[in-house]
Amino acid sequence: MYEPQKIEKEILEFWEKNKIFEKSLEKNKEKKPYIFYDGPPFATGMPHYGHILGSVTKDVYGRFWTMKGRYVRRIWGWDCHGLPIENIAEKGLGINSRDEIEKMGIKKFNDYCRSKVLEYAGAWKEVVKRIGRWVDMENSYKTMDNEYIESVWWAFKQLWEKGYIYEGEKILMYCPRCSTPLAKAEIAMDNSYKNIKEDSIVVKFKLKPEKKFNNNVYALAWTTTPWTLPSNLALTVNPDLEYVYLRDKSDKNVYLLAKKLINNFFKNPEEYEILEEIKGRKLEGKEYEPLFDYFKNNKNSFKFLLGNFVTAEDGTGIVHTAPAFGEDDYAICKKYKIEMAQPVDDKGKFTKEVKDFQGKFVHDSNKEIIEFLKKSGKIVLIKKIEHEYPFCYRCETKLLYRAIPAWFVDIQKIKPKLLKISQKINWHPEFLKEGRVKYTIETAPDWNISRNRY
Image 1 (tube, helix red, strand yellow):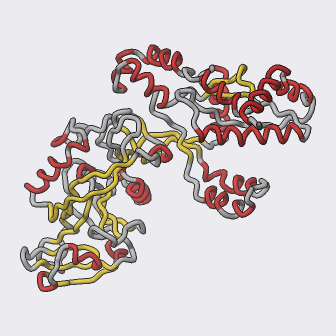
Image 2 (tube, helix red, strand yellow; image 1 turned 90 degrees about the horizontal axis):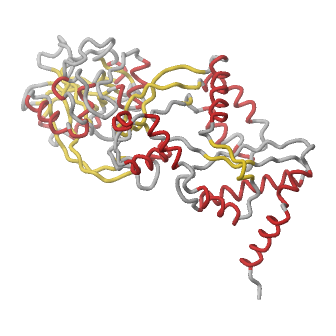
Image 3 (cartoon, one colour; image 1 turned 180 degrees about the vertical axis):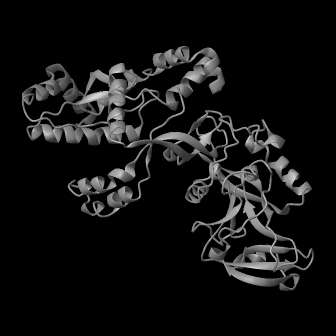
């Protein structure tokens, strides 16, 4: 009877007893090396099928080039940094915030992390051995080793000296409980999004007086995040969309919005009168009064901007713009040289600049902000909507977009070189060379290398 499991184990025992992997290395030791870089896993949990699939694939390449006569030294590594181990440490220590880490002492916290970082190393060794991968796990490197850390600083120094490093800001999904941004890959995980019901509102922004209209003139803007309105610094319209000034016959005010979206507010054409139609590009630079007075002296602010990301699919066709809390917002305000306003601290609470809501957690302040605007007559519509929203997959805290001070590698400077080198690589399938790989390089943003944990 054929017993594959028994045969597999016999082969593994034969390899181990006779040191076949070690002999394959010794045999080619003086030959030309084949350098194989292997991104290390965390040892903060059990290996799963994804690790096994990747590990088997990596093993194939090592064996192939060994048989081609090359010296392929394969050394295992452990990734010891980042939130996975800090999350385990916080649970083990019974703490729940960055403040508590600082109160305890960073050294004590890091020492505890170090003690727990290889908790599952033994289980990993058994799995790697069982799948038949040839790799040196006894002399493994660890990213917490000073020798490794110093090599990272050396690489950073080379980038700095070549002028590839700069300090800036990046808008990232941010967890106020963990006090750290999350990577896009983390937000794309299966348990990251939940369906929630929230109030969306349409707010009216009063335009600076225009002689051609005798009435008060307001631009209408829709938002699903009322807590960002105290940080409003601009309104953005699409340059190619048709907008209208129309008079509401009930309150005699004049409103500005996208022509395609009139029906969102007026069901009967007899309720309003169109006074003027205008292309979005002609609104550029038009001024309006700040909704709040927190940043009324902010440079280049409270004007209409032009952005192709604005659509007429829903809302009003006019986007409330707060550069600290949205990728498009940040990019368009940077283009128009609008100074950043960041009135939310690393715990997700309003700072003293927003005096009426100081100390409030932003997601808990929506109702208060809506009431505040209602009392001043600045809300046109309140509508409950259900939508998917991302939560931190570690602690289930509701995330927020936030401008994070960061250090970047200037990818734009080296894109021509990257594209040239990519043409020399033997991609499989071949169409990737002119397809996904080329597109990924051409559209790559600058690389954010900052992290906000200990």
